Each structure stands twice: as C-alpha cells, then as structure tokens.
Image (cartoon, rainbow, N blue to C red):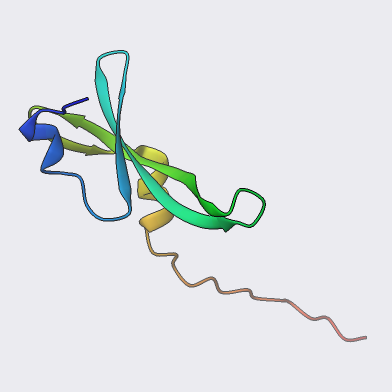
Length: 81
C-alpha cells in the first residue's frame, strides 16, 4: 500500500505508519528474534500520534510520558515526647 507524501514525511526509523478507518497513525516498532520461527518478530509499541495533511498531532498519553517530572519534596513533622 502506498501512503501519501504528507504522511510519509513523518515516518522515522523505528516507527510504523498505519491507516485505520481513513486516519493515519504513527506507532513505535521494534523487533525481537524468535528462536522457534528462526526469524525476527515485529513488536508494536506505543501510539505516538495521528498524522493529518496539516501535520503531526502527538498523542496526549505519549505527551505525558515525555513531560519531565518535577522534583518531589517530602516534609515530615516529628513530635518527640
């Protein structure tokens, strides 16, 4: 299947384009050796986002994983009798 140029320009190494019900999605992909089949097996990872003719729209769940975590400060109040 041929994908349009506007969708292909967002495909990078380690990603896969999928057309689902008329919408293009970009997924993370890796491969792992399967000793039983004696070949590599594709492993589909997380959804990275949606691709439209206007551009790439990052998945909101993926965006949360990329957001840096702020440092957490725990304060304890000790009462010694």
